[in-house]
Length: 426
Image (cartoon, rainbow, N blue to C red):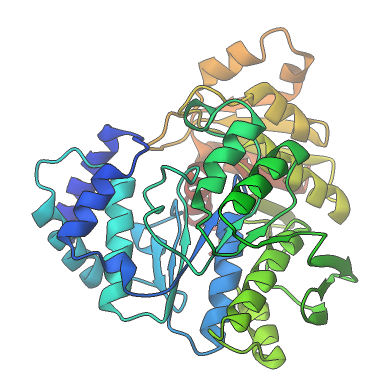
C-alpha cells in the first residue's frame, strides 16, 4: 500500500510551490490540530537550518526527551524527513499516516510539502513526543510549518535564494524569515548581514520577543579542531562529529537554544550528556569526507551562493584546494546566479565536471551550462556529463586525487547512490 500512497504524494509535486497557510490550516483542522499538542522549536534560514536542527535534536534526545525532528528535503527516502529520537519513520507508519491524510484530501489541490508537514505533526502527536524540532521548507512567514506557536525560534542565516517567492533584497527575505518569530517567544539569531539583521531585530522588538544574537549574547571559536562556547554557560573543547568550519556557527545556535530550553525548565543541560550527543550527530551531505580508491572525496550540499561561499571557506581552512570539482544544480525559479556560484569554486579547482541528473526540480542542463559559460575562459577546464555515474567513473581515472562533489541535494543523493553502485563507497 505504501507505493500507492507515495505515488499519490508524488503527484502533488505538480501543484508546485504555493506559499500560504489556508490549505494547511484547513487540513490540520480536519486532523484535530495535532501540531498544538506538544512543544516545538521552529528553525528558519537560508543555510544551516538542517544541521542546526539535527544538532539540537541529538542534544534533546540524549537528555532523555522523546524528540521529533522534521526536515526537508530528503537525500534517499521520504522516511528521512520524519524522525523520532533521530530514527526514521518506518514504512508501515508512513503508509498509515499517508492513508489518513489521503482520506481528507482526495481532490484538494494541496502541495507535497503541505502533506508532509501535516504528516509530521500527526506522527509526532501519535507518538506522544515531548518536544519537536521543526525546520521550515522555504522562507517562514507563509511556510506551511508556520502554524505552530513554538517555545522559541531560530534564524540561522539569510542570503539570496528562492527570490521569486521571498523577494530580491536581503531586507525582504529577512522579513519573510522573521515571520516565524512569535509574540513573547524568544528568538536565537545567527550571523546575519546588517541589512537583514535590522529587519529581524525590529520584528522581535515589535513582538516583544527577546532576541539572542550571535557574537553579542553567545559566541564560539575553534581551537585545535574542537569548539569553545561562551553563553550562559561556557564549554571548552567540544567535539562535534559534523565536519566543516561552518558547523561551529550551527553548533552555537543549537547550544543557545538548549540554554533557553534549560531556562524554561524543559531539561537541565548535563555536560557529559551534551558531549556524548555532539560526538554522535549524523547529518548526511554536509562536508562529508570519504577516502577511497586512493582518493579523497568531499561531498557537500551547497546549493546556493551563500552555501558555496561557506563551503569554499571550509575548504580553504582545511587546505583542500587544487581539486577536481563535480557539480550539478537545479534552478527551479530561474533566479540562481549560476555563473557566479560556479566561479566561487572554480578558482580552487583544476578541472570541473558539470552534470545533469534526475530530480523533481528543474535541473540545469548541459545546453544551459554551455549558454551560461559561452565565451568564458572557464569553459576550457569544463567537461559535461549527462550521467553522474559516468562523471564518477572518469573522476577515479583522473590524475587528481582530490575531488569535491557539491550542488543540489538531489544531485548529491544521486551521486552517492551511483558511487555505491560503482563500489566507491558503502
